[in-house]
Amino acid sequence: MRAVVLDFFGTLTDPSAESGRRASFAATAAQLAVDPGAFWAEMSGSFGARACGDLGGTRETLAAVATRCGATPSPAMLDDAVRVHLAGAAGMRVPRPDTLTTLAALRARGFRIGLISDCSSELVESWHSTPYAPLVDEPVFSWQERCRKPDPHLYATAARRLGVPPAQCWYVGDGGSREHRGALRAGMRPVLVTNAGHPGAAALRVEPDDFRPDDVIDELGDLLALVGAPDAMIVHACDESVARRSLADGAASA
Ligand SMILES: [Mg+2]
Image (tube, rainbow, N blue to C red; front, top):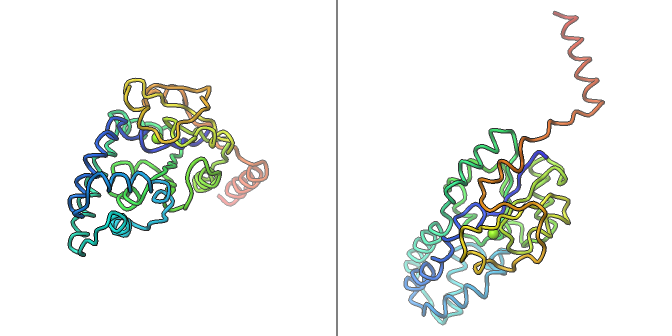
């Protein structure tokens, strides 16, 4: 195995942080001068479309959702709503205590690191300012790819960008969006993070998986013991003979 592909929410992020979503959405609704209950219903009901990019970026999304709630916010109100909304989104993606050290340790061992996230515009627009970005080689976002897990396109895209065949990729997630079945179908080796230490987290999952992988860990940090070290790069016989020839040429000209 040469790469580790991870889910984002509830896997890299602190699973308990999701419980702040209702208050965060209420703060955005206040900026748009719409009813918080109506805003929550429209945002929750449109997650699938938002995660596939159907409503555009955060500003376009908030304008569209406000319209559905019967409001027409001014440009200045929209500016404030975007700022408040993105700040709220940041609060729901705080890393688990062992996330950044685990990613750094995997990279230090030589694993390529990928990400597949079913996410709406907020994460994509903010990705490069998050502490995750420097530790992930190839992030794949549903919002950009216009499809959600378990769509095979997402897994194939992650493997292709990493330059690692799917059979050489672990796939690690907390089990939302039927992601493990998708990973298995794509040829990756799925790992479930149970979040056993976060008893309320399971109720916050979207479309829980009915399939339980053979490889199971409770905390993300347990991944280090499970995956060990990456396999050495397999050098193709042809490449090897070329390498030998160039070494011999080098020796002859020295
Ligand atoms: Mg998840």
